[in-house]
Amino acid sequence: MRRLVLPVLIFVLVTSCISNKRINYLQNLKGNEPIGLDEFIPFAEVDYEYILQPHDIIDVDFASPNQELLRAFEFQGAKSSSVGRGGNSGGSMDVFYFSGYSLDKNGYIQIPNLAPLKISGLSEIEARDKVQEAINYYFKDEVQVKLRIGGIRFTTMGEFNNVGPKILLKNRATIFDAISMAGESSILARKNELFLIRQYDGGTKIHQINLNDRRLLASPYYFIQPNDILYLQPMQIRQIGSGENLTASLQLGISIITAMMFVYGITSGLF
Image (cartoon, rainbow, N blue to C red; front, side, top):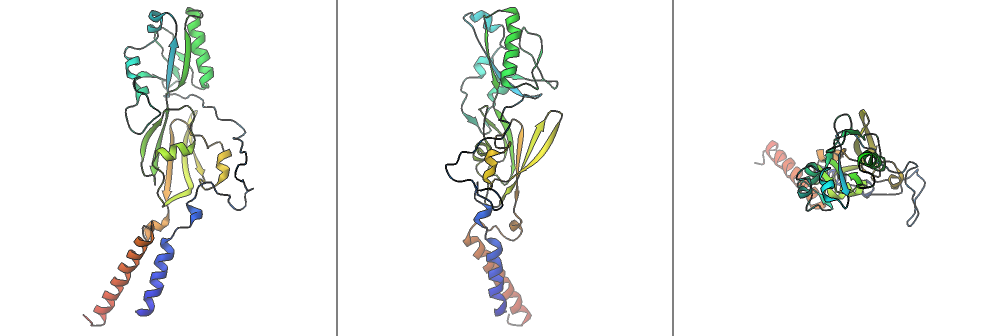
C-alpha cells in the first residue's frame, strides 16, 4: 500500500496540470513562420465585408429638412424604441429588434411607402445605395439614407463563462471581442479547437479555429459575423479532475489515497 501512494499522487498531479501551451492565446506555434511583436499583420486577402442575408436586422436612418417627409418612411414607435442604445448588449433588450428593419426569408426589406427591395447578397454600402435610389425616384435629393447592420448577433456555447445569445452593437468586431463579451473561456477549454458555425447563402459551414495560433489574426475568421455560433469543447482532463489549481488536484489525490487505505484496512482486518 505504501508503494502505491506515491505513484497515485504523481499520476493525479500530472493528469491534473495543464500546460500553458494549451491556454495562452496567439502563440508562435512550431512549424509556422514566426510572427514577432510589433510586426505588421495584414488581414486576409479578402478584406472583411459582411454580405446581408435573409432574416438579418438592419438599422436605417433618414435625414431631410422636411420632417413630415421623414415620418413617411418610419414605422410608428421606431424612434422611441431606439433611445438608450449602447455599445454592446449581453442579454438586455434588443433595441434593433423593435426599431430596425428585418429582411424576410427571401431577403427583401419593407420600408413604409416603398415597394419591397431585395438587399440580401449586398454589402451595407450597396444596400444603402439601393434604398437611396428607390427613395430618389419619388423624392429627388430630399431624403438621405444611412444603412448599417443592426448589431452583430452571435451565440456562445460550451466552455465559456457566459453562454447564450449576445449582441455587439458594432458593424465590425473580432473574435476576441466576442470571447471577451462571453466572459472569457474556462481553463478547461480546448482553445485550439474552437468550432465556428457560420451561415452562408443557402447553408451552413463549421470551421475549426486555433486561438493559440497568431496566424488567426490574418485568417478570414478573425472577424465574426452576424448569426455566428462559437462552441468551445472541454479537455478530457475533466474526466479525471477539475485540474484548475493545485489545491483541487491535491484534494483529489488525498481523497483517492484515503479511500485506498480504507479499503486496504478493511481487507486486512485492521478495522
